[in-house]
Length: 246
Image (cartoon, rainbow, N blue to C red; front, top):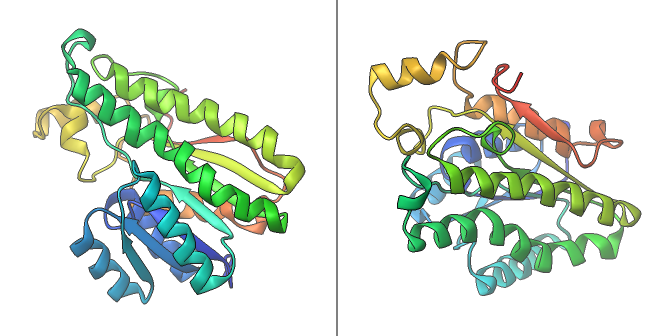
């Protein structure tokens, strides 16, 4: 019960890594609000875990304002924010990524963190405590070819995490990020271009521990960084990658 009594917003919590974080947070005692565009999936996870959900697009300022107001009305405070929602473009040479794809990747992966900070951070600063966790990627540490603008968006998130951490530390707010390697989630096929045994074997060959990250791996790492056990940890990018970035 390392998160007993804490309140937490998890974006993209209906599936994949976000679902693993939601499951672990609930098991550790947190009250969780799932925020996701996948309303059917969010409703199912919320029903299974006995938590709440809200439909939202993390790229919309109005949705962030509404989500924050709902959380404050329900809980009176926001202890934890997990910026997990993210997208990628298909593997291709950098000059072939369309402007529309580029804008969408940067808006969802980068601007969403800015939008969340505008609405949630002031609530945390007002009470002098809070934990923000951004889900970045090993792609921001050790980029893969042909995922250039996705790599860049996750590198931005890692730098944003450190910048947020140093600015918010005097206000009692900690900010960290997780850098997972590819996992067996709905985004895996997009990272690989195609989901075949051959492509999976090629990806796994780059991971020393020989397997993908799992939602449970992410849930355990997120729980630690958002708990009081990590009270002295801020500005850290924790690789959950089986040695991929060594």
